[in-house]
Length: 369
Image (tube, rainbow, N blue to C red; front, side):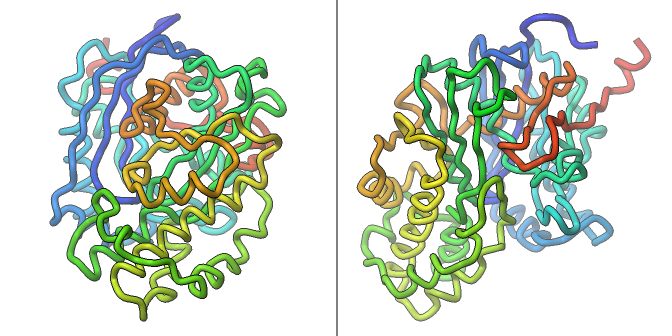
């Protein structure tokens, strides 16, 4: 059993941008954040990234041995060496996401990871939400509520994660908790870094557009942007979520453009998707705090800043770590799962009722003790 009160929890995240594994510790009781702890980043090598790219879109039953080996090895290396950790949260590597269809698929073996780390591991966070009619994503909103309280927000704010896919959480910290009616609204805004990363890999042999160096050299092509915004996804009401490759048409829309114009146009597509998403917020947020790799792209950030009516700031502006926020989220959610608390709600994933997802695997040594 998990001890009462505050505990040190370790979380890990490997996103759809396929850059690597983030691992971070927080001290929490599953409701409030007491403090943030140590963190570590373990990048994927180019060879590992290639293996994972080959596995994208595959479901259980396919030959995934090579990809599983990459995921397990990288997570063991990223999550080892942390001291005084009570349990760990393991998201796994999302390969496919089709709520309302085949479900959701995060590659990883939490039981094997528990043996390697010697602590209980909470994993498979999304499946129970999908089984109950939810999108299974995004899952960080309950943690975002705790972050809003931690930074001392007194009015609604929003957190925007610009990872492979963009997702937004609108938070009203005046509500008694994240499960309260009106406390949260969350959904995927649209593609963010994943298509731009794919473009850079295809055209330049680079994993991403570092510091927006290529994007800032180009001009946005309005025709391609307008076609992108005609996509039916933007007409759907939230909650809603996306698979990494749901907007693969973006590459087709910029196929005839030069490298710089294509990159700039993709930045505009990601920013415009956020702008459309902000229209769904129940009330204007006091600020939009940006996390994920996209906040390092000054072109994308500038596009957001000039088009939204609220300040657009990296989460570092309020003392949070945008590189580790999602890893911290799964540490927080692991504690909630272990204590039987909900991790998603109708307003975050569209699930029919409050649900706490996740399977708990304990190492054999703990089971015998």
